[in-house]
Image (cartoon, rainbow over all chains, first blue to last red; front, side):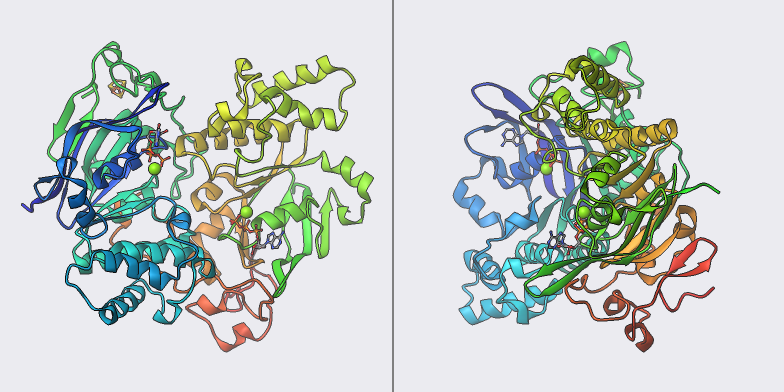
Length: 321
Length: 318
Ligand SMILES: Nc1ncnc2c1ncn2[C@@H]1O[C@H](COP(=O)(O)OP(=O)(O)OP(=O)(O)O)[C@@H](O)[C@H]1O
Ligand SMILES: Nc1ncnc2c1ncn2[C@@H]1O[C@H](COP(=O)(O)OP(=O)(O)OP(=O)(O)O)[C@@H](O)[C@H]1O
Ligand code: SF4
Ligand SMILES: [Mg+2]
Ligand SMILES: [Mg+2]
């Protein structure tokens, strides 16, 4: 068995304002093995980004409150380490590709300066400037951008190239864990394929583990070893990619997600969307959070939170099982 | 055979930009039969929205012709066009920015009816509005709500109701589901298909999502840098794509099936070239794995390689 690089236990996060409490992440647990990729899927507002920001301790300080739980990174609880320690980890050992690639870059700095900045900040080996300049070029070439373009500003690059620069910055320090929050959503399919192939290759080369956040089940099927399905701030199903894509039993929400997708292979006259909407995170239903929309709801579902039904690597949180 | 409702001939739209002319739509021939759906796919910036907008004359074309019910609408004057435009509507991608935030749901749906003076009495307008809300599945109680109070799916339903208000024959759907979650997306796609079946609507459905386009279209046009590079029935395009770009596009779709994982997609190199003053020849040549010298010699027209299947790749054989 390989060891766990990251272990999240019972994490609960809320955004609190004077007016309301948004229960964004509710008691979630999962772990990530070294070298593997975990996909987090779920609709908008499911709590995916909040989970990622908790790992990096980048939640908005004023409103976001971590209510409970622990996040162990190689055995060290990130939630209790001082900010000075986090500064050493963030960007160097754990880095993140943010959801909005187009705003992640500074428009008034050349791409050379932006990559160099990260390297200089985490300059543990006290590399001289010349070494850093060489590393910038190497990193750019690694993501398929000719080093001759290092003096370019972000606006001179296409969307796909900008996203590759963002990835270059995230990988510059060769992190042990890469968190990619919808890294290809804004890209065209042929460019998305390029970027995904590149991430895959770099991951193997640098032996990086990854959390891939997306709502595209196609991307998950093609890139992830394990998959975690989130709904209303909870993990409702988790397992290996085989469990999620080929096992016969699933959470009704997962069934609904797959039923909503137009199928490229089969001819389907009508799609089967999930009726209704995600519940209001300030006023979550009792019992199973999916119960108001669930076609297979039973009385117990509205009363009691479902416990995990575990079958090997596959867990489903539903009273049906 | 059904009748052709919309047809473009050599339709062109060039934008004047500092560096020259940007060929957004560069000689496109498409044809849509009444009651059918033409899907238009292609990557960002290839000219899909511009094609839709020029067909409706929301932007004036640079050249070519647009036939609607057999007549070239580019010859119509302003007045005739504004009458004709009631029969042709558009639904936009972004339900957030295409709706006036200060108008309620009811006012938004009433607007096209009032602007076009369809009814003489207010009560008739509001009767029609509640009918439309019912058709698109918006609950009566939302009549007084404002767009920001609604989710993306409901906002898009307002867009659909506005487009339907003037009882059009033809609707350009410009990425109507791209900004929505999959389950909401499925609800809107079902709605559009139901409306088509009930009212005999004709759609031009613009999207970059190939599984959506396959699901909703009878025929598909693939665009690349302002050109239509391939056109075929939905079935034919997915089983026998002829243009190397279409082939690359189809193999780049991440399929939600782990059995396909081992089969590594052939990744296309390079980036989409600039549409400003493009050189002659196939627009895809710089990225094409099968390029030859003939490809860059001159522009090739669309040719029919099997009944109803057109492509402009010179390598495609009958
Ligand atoms: N800074 C914040 N202040 C208050 N509420 C927030 C904040 N950030 C997120 N939320 C709320 O927390 C919930 C979870 O949001 P989160 O961004 O984690 O979802 P997500 O799964 O990443 O969604 P998406 O797919 O849209 O990116 C949502 O209801 C969201 O509105
Ligand atoms: N008003 C304008 N002035 C100048 N150039 C324009 C204008 N409108 C569109 N373009 C250019 O025309 C080309 C085609 O744009 P269009 O919006 O039609 O593409 P699209 O296929 O709809 O792309 P997307 O998928 O991103 O919506 C692009 O290069 C775009 O930058
Ligand atoms: S616990 Fe009940 S309501 Fe929730 S998903 Fe399972 S069957 Fe549906
Ligand atoms: Mg997010
Ligand atoms: Mg567009």
